[in-house]
Image: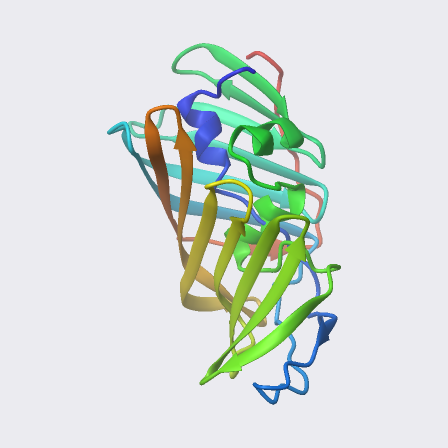
Length: 248
């Protein structure tokens, strides 16, 4: 299977899905006395943001860069990565099915289905997972689950085959504070934490996202960690452009 470049690996942890405020379909946990909870999600048609970005992996690769995002809700994610000196190093798009990346530093073009990428790391990936990781929304909003209260937080637990998804929600703000995906069959775990909430139009969103992917290789366990700090997020009803040429 084609191995992804550094830029493609970054994308595994960068993006997320934005929907309306949703009353997720859950069952009551008898021990927790949970009657009803909802998750307050960022609602938009088009989203743009400039963000500070940090990357580090088990092989010692490190990167600090500026990332510009453009998102059409539930449809398309566009991104541009600039490590420094105003020179764009990579540009890419994520659709419902595919990931396409132009690595301008190494003059490399990568195209892979989201299903193939997930198979590389034994994680159930979808377009919704990418969107959910960036804005603090739910990755599987249509999937039934179970609520369990713990102090000032509540966990919404979901399962897809051998994958377990845990969304930890602050009861007062109804915002997701952390997301964790793990597998009962494979030694892979994807986690994210959301903090430093800031105003976005008449809503709130996390300005700081820290994420980690832990997975097994032939050489042992490997980790990829990413930190994203939004500097200028905006939402709009006005359509955006998503300039991208394959292989350029």
